[in-house]
Image 1 (cartoon, rainbow, N blue to C red):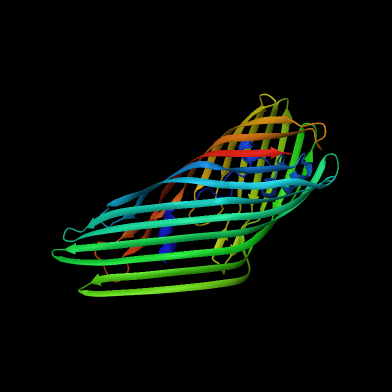
Image 2 (cartoon, rainbow, N blue to C red):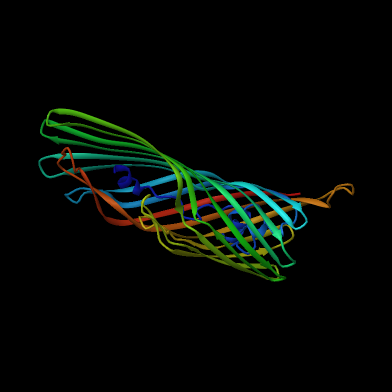
Length: 423
């Protein structure tokens, strides 16, 4: 109970697209459904593998990231005193590592590992409440560490000059650890009373999801559509430890409860997603527009509910020279979760440098080339989050309740760095 109520003040990074997965995504602000080619096609549109030229190795990540979260009146008392929540996080996220290659004429493959979500947040708050005769000091601490990994593989088939199709399968591993401590001390003259709640929760989950896509590319126009299946989880392990300790009315009491549960079976915990995009080449410009729809999900048994939601992305690239390309764009990353979660809006600016090396006459191909992409991503998130009202008079029960919602604001700034070897 305490975890589900208090951990709401810990904002997650982004929603579906909180991390840039690959250089194409950085240069086009995620609007890549019609243009992606490398290993990141496994996550965006596997049909893009069909148009793969040379084999390539991609490594990318957010070399440095900042996230600032603020929630006014996170803790409140009956005498209208409140404490604002504010946390600043420093992150370094290895977003993607992939390799793509030709298997046969017109048939290409890729494998890779992706970090699609990374959270490492810590929040501490203090509040003193008073009714004129007694003073109560409350302290709240929350720690949240969560990651989501995708281990993916897929194929792309170049059906004809202008058409390719593809499919990919990703194994999902999620892990999260949350700890919450709420402690209150009441002073009434020389009498001191104390109560504290603490909870530690650990979740480990394994599952999978599949993607299929089609890509049409002409001289100036490219179109792409991909469909992601619902995420099916096969194994969930939940462990929790909850303790309550108190010194009230001259009596000391303590209680601890530990639980571990394993769920083996097929559970639908992730929404299906339809992506569609178009790109237009105008001279040295490449303009791309993407949209997607997340479909409603209702899982009453797992208490997981998500609504239908849509997002859009726009990207533009300009080839300054054969070596230099700049790009960027704007995106929305609105939440489909029915419970508290902010909607994100932001933009990306990036530049890519390519260094081509000619090979000797006896080599199997004419050249190889290296490219490095550097980008900056900013996102602004805004949503509603509940505050928590604490009591002035500490009692064995009902010392805190959920208060009315207030505005949760999140600022994210990250530096993207990616490298690609084409061989």
